Length: 234
Image (cartoon, rainbow, N blue to C red; front, side, top):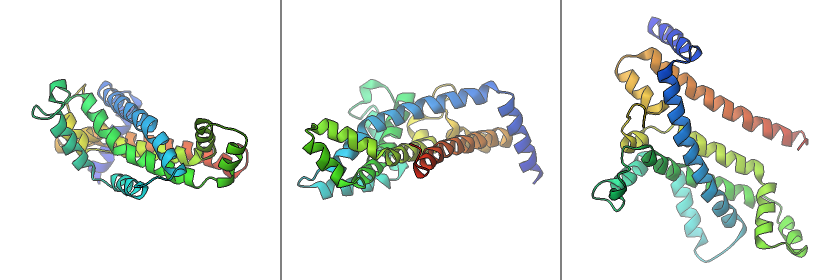
């Protein structure tokens, strides 16, 4: 219990004192996770919307693959990215292994199925009469797609939140392709593992508290938008 209390006290001091090491880890984490989430959102939202609005031969197979991706073990994603970026892999010439680029690729692959899958579900929940009205008014497919996504924006927001939660909390794939290099590829989750193994419980707890704080802020923002919808103020 004393270790827990002293660790918590040290964690608070590091956070309040803006310790350079802690700030460095936060910066790397937010940068790689933010870029990965943007990539996943730019690709996943249009694909999810199209899957939710259209029917085509083999759609069930595509959706099944997407759902499988939503539950895919991140460490397997890390293994695949590792092989692709290794010297023997097809992209080995890029020399991206153990760099932030490798982490971004792995995190993008982890969050993409979540963003696309939740977006598809949200779009499928939009009233079908809206699409019919848009077509009757002469809207193009792109305009109808955009209007539907706007109508399903709360569900799309949830998809982005889910994608962010997956990448910011990932450790196995990140450590496998990033290598946990200080100032380059060390992020919050891998720092927690490292500091715990070295017995630096205060620093490890600081990183854990920061992860919880980020999660809380993201959920708070999501509830804020959901609350506006429920109260009819949007």
